[in-house]
Length: 257
Image 1: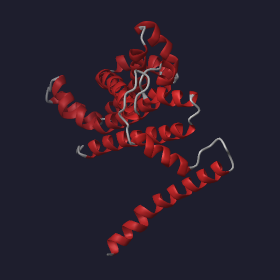
Image 2: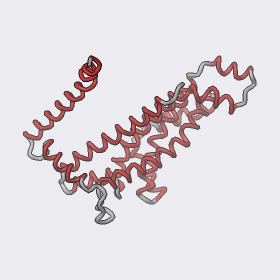
Image 3: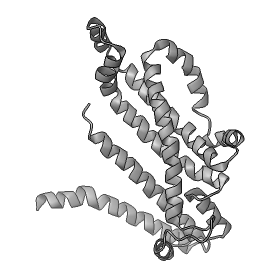
Image 4: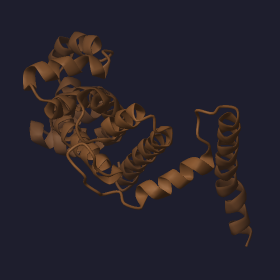
């Protein structure tokens, strides 16, 4: 009984109070603004919207479920390509000093560039909106993976590598037995940062490129002046992003370092 009460006080009550205050502030703002729909009106609109999330009435008129799945598909492809290239590159940059010095100015120069600044390059090269959006996801996701993985390799105690050298271990053995286990926490941190960035960027990219996706859906609802659906989309984007990060956190907990 004491454990249940402690759980209610420490873990359940604070988020409930926080959400209650958020909804209260939202309701007060909506009460003083005719353009902003309140929580009740938005809730009824959400119930109607999710009652049939997978309807299809044409290429640009599809349910919110299809829009979410299309956005997740683009994020999955761009994020996966970034992981395939960024993580091995991060290991090599952290492992070899010459490569680190060679790539450091390039990474430092390109990393602060806004992801959407890469969109025109994608449209120019690929000549299509969908691969251009995937390209933006790729280029925005790759930097956290490279930087965090390289940092993890650099944090490895030199004594470990000295022992490996004394034992005459091959580079593959050094990687699998020493580098990878020691770098895994840093690598997973980079992956978590990258997935958050990818999901953040896809909404803005789809607003500009069009097609079926949550970003285009937001822009289309704005053109229709359907503010309730825009607010619903904001919650959907936040919830999906939270679920993606939670999934990666649970995966990280399954590893022992």
